[in-house]
Image (tube, rainbow, N blue to C red):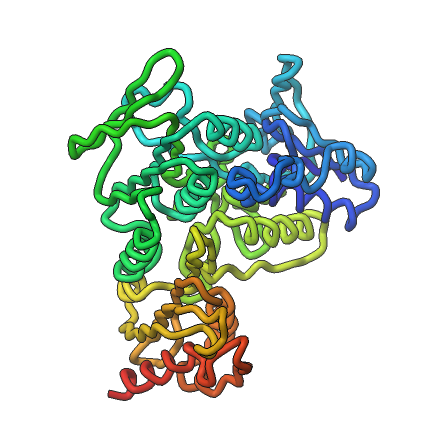
Length: 451
């Protein structure tokens, strides 16, 4: 069997490795227009922050290591066309500047996503960066060493991770978000709380501006030195990092007749099959099924990509596997503040037709006399009609993520608030309060549902 994989970061690399274990004699070729394969893109902000000095720590597996398993990785090879009727792909070798056709029996599309770059005047100036590749990471870190001021455009997960990285590197940073709230995937009041908690520790080292759009970059031959906004502000800067979201790479799939879903990413079934026979897709270029209500969602995360890559490989190799979907679970940190969520927000629940009720509690994450006790704020959302749990959001300098992970299991089990309240959550002073904050939230929700 001839298996071709397009893309080689998380999903593509995972698919290649799994396919080899399943079919020892298959011919496996992986084509990527990148200069590296199988690396942790999620770790890039932490390399820039200075958590480790050698970027090669991000590399999971080299082309030479793949070759030992007879998996042929072709770096700087861009697949420019898929030809389903003849089961071929057209490949452009960017190093040798030639092109060739390659045949497949099964094709796995793992083309990922690319940074979204807003239309800003003079955006081609030097020292205006996006974050996608190892080269991006190296260039940003090198520029930080000679910078005293930086601007970040975008206040989502990556924007806040880069804010931490820049501040840790001693660079005075301004983050601008065009929406009224940073971390807009959270409910508005939780987003505002995130902003306020971050600004409370700023100490003049960074600023966060919301409802403000960058309209123009100014600079000279050496690069950008100022940004201008729609509110008339002009900020001096040595560099700009655009973290305004990502766009799925779906163009060659669409040209081949592969259908997109309502999110704009590739539509696949639970076997990661597209509508075109023998073509599978996985990773940041595909949409998922939101398990809360079985609606389409696009969650470009490394954890999802690895699971989908495995599933795509198994089915492409003739071994049935199912990827049911996701809960929308995510976590990040910024300057000691952890932010995490799962399921749907109260606002999104209402849009989906539920009758949401919520409970928000702020409490120590462990018994107050413990020296490392910290406040956390949890918001838990349920449906008033059925009592079903729908989602949760959490933030704080304490143990937020383990509370959100507890809710993910409850969502997967489709528990009601009453059922969840019976949960036997562990307790000891170094780990929790006697009544865990999650159970406090459940108590409040029960009273709201029954009122």
